[in-house]
Length: 207
Ligand SMILES: [Zn+2]
Ligand SMILES: [Zn+2]
Image 1 (cartoon, rainbow, N blue to C red):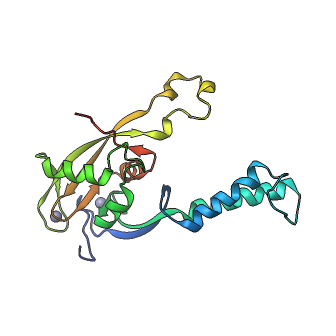
Image 2: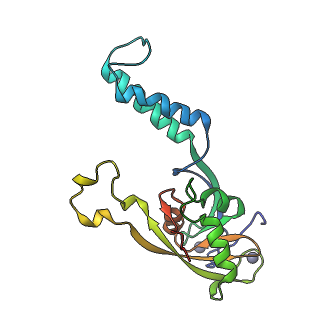
Image 3: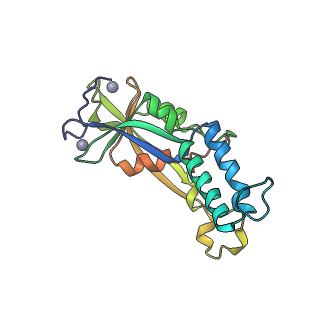
C-alpha cells in the first residue's frame, strides 16, 4: 500500500497510529517469565520458595502484581494501523490482519483472518465504499462472533447468580474489505477492537 491512504468514507488522508493492544497476547518469553515469577509473590507472599530480602507481605504482593502487569504488557501486541481522525474508521493491512486476527491456541474456534479472507472472496455483496488502494469496490461481509468477556467465570460458576452472565454474547461485526489488496475497512473503530480481542472468537461450524 502507498504511504498516503485516503479514508474510504471520503474524509481525506488517514494517519498511521501505533497502538499497544493489551487484550492481544503475543509470544514473548521474557513477558511470560515475568508473569510466572510474579505468581508466588501474590499467591504466597509469606512463604516464598526462595530467600528474599524482605518478608513484608505488602511489599512482596506489590512486587508480584508489578511483575504480572509488566509481563502482561511485554507480551501484548503492538501494531501500526491506519485511522481516520474524522469518522473514526480503521484500516487493517495484511500484516495487522495476521497479527490481530488469530484463532485460539487449541484451534477450537476459527482462525479469524482465514475466516474473513474466505468470506470476502465468496461474498457477492458490494460495499458502499471503494478500496482506497486499487479503487475497486470493496466487498461487504458480516462476521458472527462470540464475545468471551461476557462468558461465565470458569473458576467460580456457582456464585454467578445472573443467568445471563452464563451465556456468551453473540454479535455480528460488519466489515468491508478488498481481497486483492488484502485489507479490511472497519467503519467503526470499536468493531475492529472487538473483533481483535483474544477473548472474541468465531465459532467453528461443523458440517
Ligand atoms: Zn474517515
Ligand atoms: Zn483494493
